[in-house]
Image 1: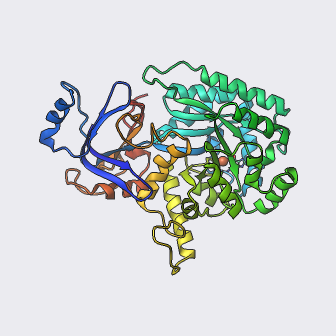
Image 2: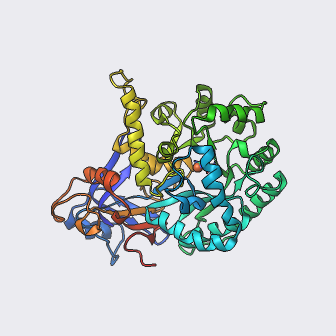
Image 3: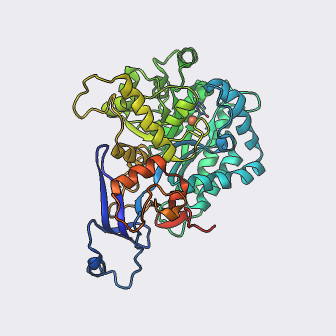
Length: 464
Ligand code: GUN
Ligand code: FE
């Protein structure tokens, strides 16, 4: 690939490279990158790397490459509900909207007819790695994993564990049944056939206790033992999401009197560790932040959902200052959009809401607390930060030699269907400015190609 490349570096910096030459090997890994190459030097540079008679994809003016997005928290079975029931807050929304929808996936045929378009929509939104909550159903979640696998997306797929405080139509019969279905799902996912284009499996299982309230201590204990048997197993759950959490926390504490906080429940049962993804974390206390930082667990920031369900504004800047890993999640259908672009926009607004509350206060130099997030931070939280949450930052989330080519070709040209910048397509454009306009005004019409492990799997030019 020759042309404009955006590469995240840290929470405060990104590389905008207008004339980059990036080589992808047949393994789907990045073979080498030369960051600044004149037009006239492209063939010579390739030859110097032993690339003779190799095709070059030349990006046009108004197009750039960037790493694919990470959605670190979403619910595949809730996609059909996007945009409904927004009059509710969390607990009423779960009871009236969410659990009835998820319950329909007891029918594997419903899963088979619904999940393909769900996964397609998420891929075409630019998500190359996705952390999926399924339902409590083994068969439907196997089907979800198979569909994700066939699509070529990189993903973590989990089956919800729920054996208490759930409606009669949507609850697992016992802790043992929940654990045994979880283990069966894990072996099923591990036995999916290898991809011809990927040495490593792209779909991996993830332990998914829905949240403390829906799991008995016996179930959490067994989930902790399962986690201990495999230190590489990722874990995802919800924590401290909604303002009615004080009463919910009181309820949680009455269920788990042996624990000192909501986060403490996960700590007590051995499911708070470096590969645990905690969704929301809007109302965490100091002690919980210290615990999360100590365990190196991460927060999936889901600002669209946090606004939409009236949950609150998570102080992400503070979490970053505390050294906690943070990335973005869509939390469909608490969030009404499957696109990480929408999460980026709302993460920016959420940070500005907090900054407004602290207008005029002096902030420590270099601190993120009470300040708005920069474009570099938003890029980081949607790519490399996601890779850190999933503990895959050595292989995906940014571009460097030896890493997997999980990438988007973004177009803000007039012919993209959604020109993010008006004017002549042949005039040179400021690359960092194009990224910012894509973030704030772009949508899936601007995502022309989606690659995972070097393979084209989606985008507007992808023919199904
Ligand atoms: N807490 C428990 N389940 C859910 C869910 O499905 N969505 C959200 N946003 N919060 C939850
Ligand atoms: Fe959620």
